[in-house]
Amino acid sequence: MNTVLLFGMPSGGELLVIGIFIIIFFGAKKIPEIARGLGKGIREFKDAAREVKKEIDEGENASKDNKISS
Image (cartoon, rainbow, N blue to C red):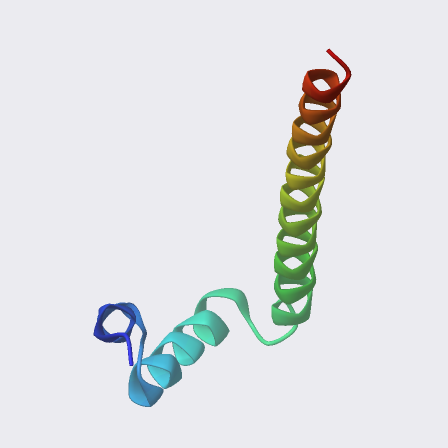
């Protein structure tokens, strides 16, 4: 088990306190909107990361093809 990750992760009690603060500050009606926005942001980040990886792979393949044909 990787102990480095365990130090940064909140435990059950800490998650409960964080959840209570979120409800107090934003209200129960705003939480679904916040979660949707967070989900969209994460999805866009993953899509962008996938696109960059695809472009890098295509660039590597193109440079390999150029070396072979030369």
